[in-house]
Image 1 (tube, rainbow, N blue to C red):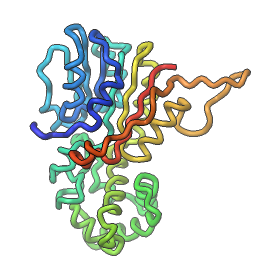
Image 2: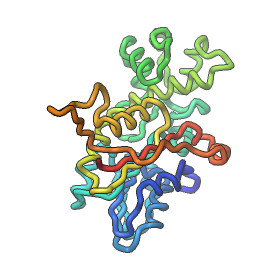
Image 3: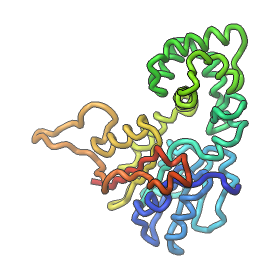
Image 4: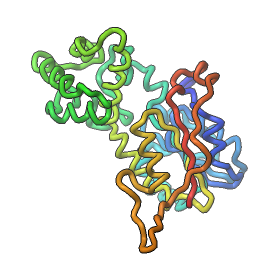
Length: 299
């Protein structure tokens, strides 16, 4: 599909992989294939690229290339599916987290506040848990926790209470119905920002995004070859915090364990500094504005 997704930090994130012509690489968020095409440009005839995407729509963008394999699965299962293809170690892994432009722009997917689509938000449309289920069936306390933890909304309890009150009268099935139910929490000057936080929270819950990211990151140290690279683009503080902490400490909370001599044993080390898009890229692609690229290699 043309214009499926404009890849963010394309050159920087692929440069970060330090690609060898005969290396084996993984793009765990294939989407429109922008990053994968750039990786393939730099691979020689003996190189190999595996890509993951659980979204059936993304599978229509498959690249016809003997060096390329597209796996229609969630990247939380990266090790399992690579082993199916006989791959135990790789030279680099790239992840461009978040939602693709196509998913945002396709009204029927329910990711965007701009369209009156069904409350869906499933990246894997075969999944049983949709945004509609979260909004209409979650108990008030659980709904409040989702809004607070994943949307970082200070008034999460009040918003959850309003949703429960509104759905008691009539189920909330579409984006605009949710917006109408929460009208008093959406002052005109802040409407877009608050709705974006609410949608982010529900989307993260529906797709288990933070759990998926944790499971993925913990597999990287045993998957990378010596001098192999991890290149991760994140779009909000919850994701970025997990990536940063895992690179720094090898865990997601608490302090790293020390041996008898007080030494720690983090499996990864950062490469270079945090990279963010230029103002020129943000002008061309506004969705790049919150992107952060972190790079790591084995310690």
